[in-house]
Amino acid sequence: MRALHAEHAGALLRYAMYLTAGDKQRAEDVVQEVLLRAWQHPEAVVGQPARPWLFTVAKNLVIDGQRARRARPQEVGEAALGQRPAADDVDRALESWGVADALSALRPDHRRVLFETYYRGNSVAEAAAELGIPAGTVKSRTFYALKALRLALEERGLAP
Image (cartoon, rainbow, N blue to C red; front, top):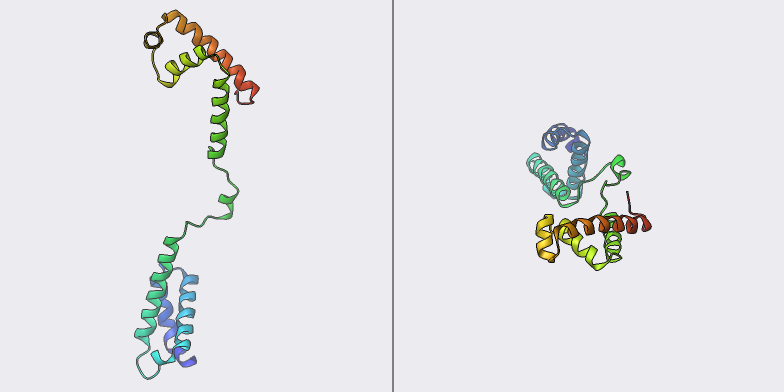
C-alpha cells in the first residue's frame, strides 16, 4: 500500500483536483477513498497496471458524489436558517381566514357590493347593473361596507 501511495497518490490527487474543479478537500477525500478501495480489493491492483483502475475509481466516485448532491435538496448555511420568509404561507392562510370571517360578519347587501366592486373588479355602473340597484346606492353601500369591514378586521386584530 505504501508503494502504491508513493507511486500514484500525487498524480491521483492532481486528477481528482481536476475532476472536482479545484476543490482540494473533496479531491483529498476522493484520493483517500480510492486508496481505501484499492486496499479492500488488492486483486485489482496487484500484478497489473494500477493507475487505470485507480483513475477510473476516482472518476466514478466524483460522478457518484455529484449525482448524490443533485438528488438532495440544496444545502444552506447558518445565516439562511435564521431568516424567515417575508410572506409565510401559514401567516397568509390565517390572515385569509380572518378576512373571510370578517366578511361573513357583514350584512349580505354589503358583502354583495364588495364582491362586485373589489372581487370581480366591476365599475360602479357594472355593479349597479349586476345588483339591480342605482349607482348612488352602490357608492354608499361600498363606503359603509368598507367602514364595517375595517371595524370587523380591527376586532380580529387584522387591520393595518
